[in-house]
Image (cartoon, rainbow, N blue to C red; front, side, top):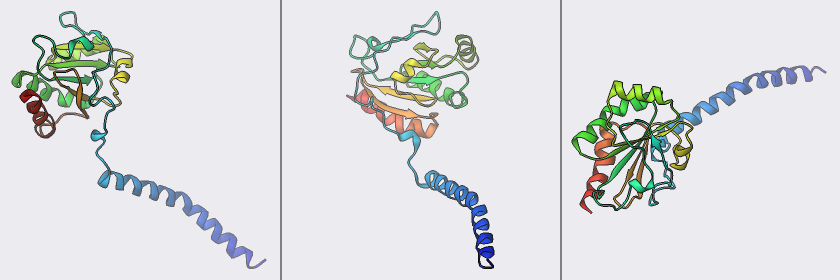
Length: 194
C-alpha cells in the first residue's frame, strides 16, 4: 500500500499537467502555421479558368444595374478585364481597401463590379454614400447565395475576369498597395496586352 500512494500522487500530478500540455501543443501548432504556413489569401479557387458563375444579381442602387454572366465576356465594347469586388458594410477590411478599389477604378480605368453580400440595402447604400461609389455595376446578394456560387468564404474577396468572361485570379482579403502592385497590376497589364 505504501507504493500505491506515491504512484497515485504522481498520476494526479500528471493528470493536472495534461490540460497545460494540450494547450501548449495547440498554441505551438498555431504559431507554426502562422510563421511557416501558407497564406490564406492564396487558397486556389475552383473557378480559375472557368466562366463566371451563372447568377443574376439584382441592382443594389436604382441608378446602377446589377450584373449576371451576360455582362462579362466578348461583347462589343467589353474587351478589357473586369474586377468583381465582394464587400459588405459591416466588413472592416472592406472599408480599409475601399480607397484602393476607388483609385484603381478611377486611375486605371478598369471596370469594377461590386457584389454586396450578406448586407442590408440601407446599410450598403449608406456605406457607399459615406465612402464613395467606384463601381460600374453593383449586384445585391442579401442572403449570400450568390457569394456561394462565386466561392466566397471571406470578406473582402476580389476576382479578376478576362475579356472572355473567365475567372483568372482570386484574392482573399483586403487589397493593399503591395497586393495591387504585385498581384493585380501585372495580371491586368498582361490581360490588356492580349
